[in-house]
Length: 69
Image 1 (spheres, rainbow, N blue to C red):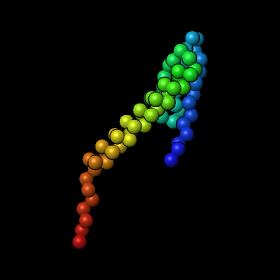
Image 2 (image 1 turned 90 degrees about the horizontal axis):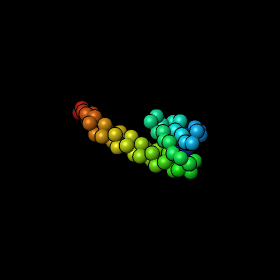
Image 3 (image 1 turned 135 degrees about the horizontal axis):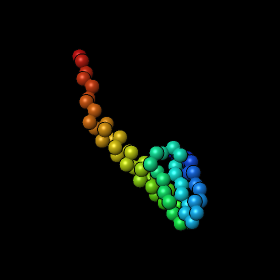
Image 4 (image 1 turned 180 degrees about the vertical axis):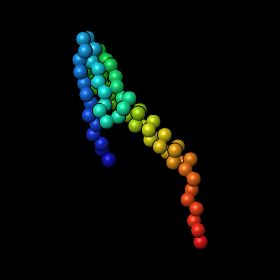
């Protein structure tokens, strides 16, 4: 499943800053637009993987439902 995300990108002085609208905490700063886009992609991928691992770990801690007979 391919999910699309929205990158908000702005130039501030000599720097390019950007963040992913849908994922809090994914924000970057680079000297060129191209570097910023690449860094945002990498940071987004890492954040999604971290969130996936965190969700799996949380699911493993859930008690199993009891089955009554």
